[in-house]
Length: 189
Image 1 (tube, rainbow, N blue to C red):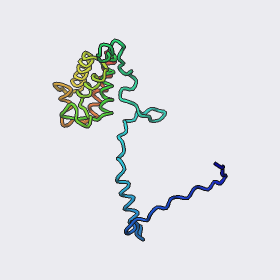
Image 2 (cartoon, rainbow, N blue to C red; image 1 turned 45 degrees about the horizontal axis):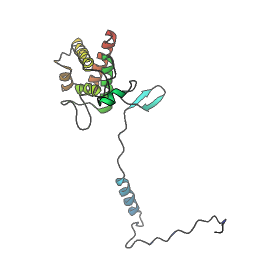
Image 3 (cartoon, rainbow, N blue to C red; image 1 turned 45 degrees about the vertical axis):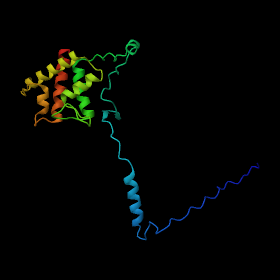
Image 4 (cartoon, one colour; image 1 turned 180 degrees about the vertical axis):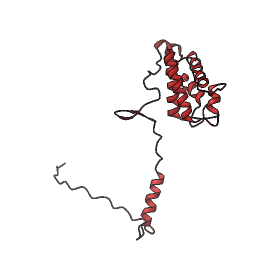
């Protein structure tokens, strides 16, 4: 086969003209309608994770950032059991619960919903289910929540009752979790 040095592209195949009226009218409204139909067919924007803000810029970070993921050992895999929980303090558990609510959304009246939002108890259960802490850690954390509620003049029978009050807002829940985490850290829990 002889080599050619001609750099011209091959001719494009002829496309048949559409049968019927052309979709573009002299005023251009057909083109606008075609563009709008194309844009409507595109998928919606994806949900973006909550950004972690640091002094050097913004980057997305998971709610459990700063804590290792639970890893199954060889014995765990051989016995087909879940990985051992990552040991966390009660203060860390409360901070993780606050970050979980911030990442997935807050809810009143139920532990969780189909959108992934959780209440205070649902966030604590999710942190535990993801392998951070033990049931004893959760009990200690809930005692700290009750101490802060009673110490700030907001008596309640449980943190869940406080969560479900009509006057409670998401910011109130985060503030409660932060105060309880600070109290637990001071006490070394």
